[in-house]
Image (cartoon, rainbow, N blue to C red):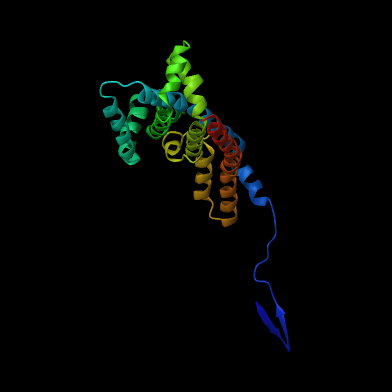
Length: 243
């Protein structure tokens, strides 16, 4: 902004920027950030193991073992992707809280992933079907059974899609707030980071603190993406060279 002072013009700054970490210190004092980060990573690890094992097994079955009505079951599973989460929210809440009495625990967030995920199964199945069956037959001639064929033939050819599915699930768990708000609202010691920061943002109208919390919530996904991208590209190169 230019201001006249007598016969002279002076340039006066409108904004003054002062770097400070006070907002981050306030976040650490107000929230249990280390505990919430630990909860999020542990929750992601447990559900990652469950959803990857179940999704890989189901996708392998759809891709390599033709069963009567197998295509119908596959398309029925795909149809569940079109069902909005709001439709199943009340029935699942009733089952988990009223019937199973899982309120205030991680069980409603963890157990469903041990039954697979339709999107992950679809991605894995499409990749498994693109692998020539001649490799399976060669492994069978060497005495390999279905399980050994999966681990020795199918998965080594599918690391890029396996890593992609793992990343999709990690980002989903990292950004999860709805399920946590339903089942963990009474257990502040179990809440994940996204839900904790979202609750803080709803209570703090100060823009500086909101920006600090937004920066914290995006650090880990960005680091994971940067780190995994290198491995993802390396797996693509290795897979292409072997093919």
